[in-house]
Length: 609
Image (cartoon, rainbow, N blue to C red):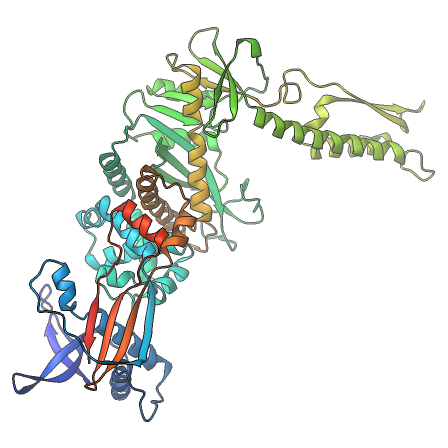
């Protein structure tokens, strides 16, 4: 075995270049010929004086017996030897029995004598998540879509690898690179050498994806509709944010704002999503971290192409009068959480329904005075218990604070200045989350009106508030034809969008962001959005089969399967290498059957050296 340099010419540009090939001498038809085992490419950078060491080490790895003298090779040579030995095994033709299983004419299976004690298992690589992810991409025609956008084959492979890495091992591009090159068998499934994938190409992936973001989102959602037959009649809209690590002064969108993860110490980015009722993403957009929710709606929905009369479902943070007016002008229907603070409910005129988990909910439907909107007042016993507990906690905190202030006035060295006492009461009100509005606080002073002598308070709950009407909320809609139950069940779909955000953040590496460039930050979020789309394809298929496991749970089941190479010493002195996937365990086999995909991804490869 040796390395040979060959001068060749590019068919497209006519440019001459030198390529490197791993060659071995083989006796073919009574003659000794040089056979190319592996093309090492034009960018093979190992110094020429190390080539003999590399070839000798590859021969050792492919031989079953331990060498008489261990080779002392550098770390660089060892990495390349491990990589090329694995490629030789993975590229081997399938054995006759595998060809027969594929419907090809084959010779009867040959039996060989091996030494059991020589058995070694090498190159274990994960394959389960990769296998399922590629099946979802194939179902939506993702690679064909990328090719139609003019993206070359090398970049298409890098894009697929980056998205699958986000599905399997969420993290930064650096973490994805380590997973792709050192943990996964994805390259074998794609018939590509990903062990040598350069890190810079993963960063380039986000640039290419952002360039075609609108076309990709539109085409994927169209494929989803064709695959599952979902009607595009309900549109869910919401925003969330994620945080950066570092100052991010070069990114104009990295701004400080209200963090939903309580990371107010970090700059933020805001992600807006438009989803359909099945949970698939129709459109995504990245806003500045201090974006105000209600100002983003028109920007996101404009040009979306939703059919006339489509229903837009939003939470109260976006349901401003201006947004509702804009929706009506554009011909949309809307269903939103009302922003009005006053609460009303009449149990005598309410109807009761059960939620999906069997909990009761009472609904009271009313038509507005101008008959342009429907108000749906809802009462949830579970929500009532939660709100009562919250109010009791804050009321107790407020009363305890007032008691401490009042008790402090009896001390001989107490500070009794009215200005200072008023300031302390003000801080106490601010810390008790609105509990103070239900109290009448009286501060008694001396004749000079500058020194406080006593603090008195009385609880007087404000009418039509959360204290007097716990568990009550109101929905608004300009669709006058829907009954109370249909309105409520449709609005509950918005909780599915919140589940989308939870999946993106906790299961698909949306946070944190380490990039300093704005485009790379936007691209990082878009890769997570694409990963979610393919996860949703898998989960939708599994739900149809009665499997409702979260993606993190599914990933745990899928990640158990490995591709390994079993190596034996044969009686004739040669070495047998067989590479195949481990047998799926019962839970994994159940998933594969539900997804209708093969249980042994990658097939079987056999090499005799």
